[in-house]
Length: 252
Image 1 (cartoon, one colour):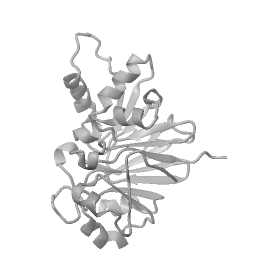
Image 2: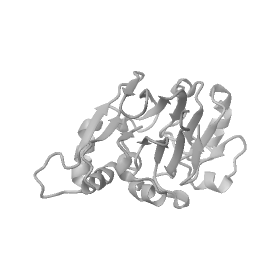
Image 3: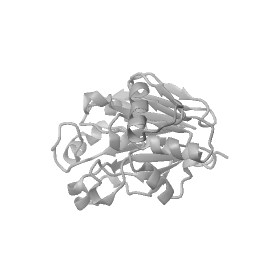
Image 4: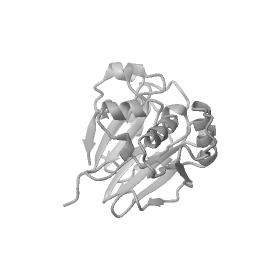
């Protein structure tokens, strides 16, 4: 019998901690395996708060390179090293990750240690629209496809379509409306989508008004909102959408 796949919202907040929520981090897990999708600066705190063993995380998938989505990786890596975990922490991110992430780690935690591998990261980069398989992460593998979206270009933003054990999980990352979201979410079991404001306020983020107008274009029955700003949080519940909360668990 195949174990259920659970999505645990370690953090579903925006960069500003609106509503006291932790920064973006999703934990995808079964009874035997787990990996993270994004790893904001507060991720290690969230993992401990919600009872997820940080030493059991072997892989992090990244949507883009903003600190509230990837600045937690150095702390996660150092925790594993301190616990004696010898397996490298795998990171699959957009182009530029292999150069930027080690620099971030060394800036956040300078050390007198001469070891260049003290964070023990194994970084790979995905190319837009090209599926990448993580054979070690799950029985039968996990396939990840990045779809470029409309956010700050310097962060190389992508929505991620994640396929495993016959299920499809899609996360928008941070983005304004982009037609690539339609392709990424087609036929998905769940589409986790950012919704920072009720009405258009920022050219690089989605809003409820736009999502409602484009809802018919998204071929996915279940949409869960995340990365919500203060006005969205104040308006909950919002008809037609589910809303994430820190610590919430969804099975697919």
